[in-house]
Image (tube, rainbow, N blue to C red):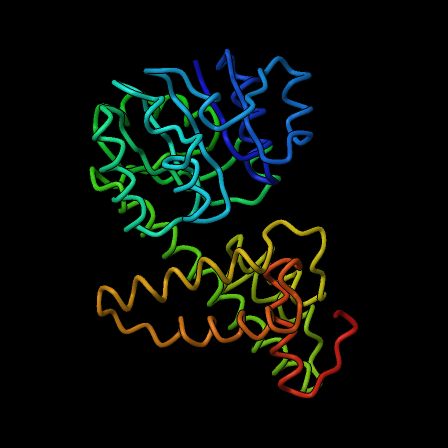
Length: 297
């Protein structure tokens, strides 16, 4: 028996791939119940509460927006911790703080179940194509049980050991690097534009030569073209993640000056009402600082 909780832009295609690869019965829950419709048509079962999405000893996946949402699903009145019981496994695919992951792991252990961190890199289209890169950490026996399932959901799984917080650190590190790259690309493109060089031609050359990698090719092209739709990852969630990086850095006494720059850039975008835009829209603030008018809000 499998369960899946959280059917947003990432959770829905991941759950769909579980169905396609024969991981049934699959019981699904989402606060907005109608989002489950495609899965129900494909043979999933509808759960009325998070607790109803799991059976004792089963495996439940969560893909939720933030730490509070994950904690509520685990420990709330209709939470899954008490229901999973002995030998149950909670696979958290959300981007949360390492401390939250460790705390929830302890709570699960009290009930005889296991908590495994499995955050992912990739946008919704990668999730739909089962092309995610999946980070993994947690108890060894639980990982042995879930890793073959995860390999149906992504192109690679990377194991970072027994600490359930480790995969969260890896995910936050990656998102920090992406956000810092977007800031740097936006600054370079505005620099070019202000000095009469075509911004799209610049990113085309750089992303085919010294920066030939997906982030520069895909994000860079979109930033150069000021193309922030369709939304693959909301700016509000990007701000949440960079905020987690900053808080984790402070807690571990790790100086990260660039985090502060990106954090302020994203906070400014949030203050301007851009939270529902793609997080690449942080580039709009770079242009505005240089006196370039934007046709985006």
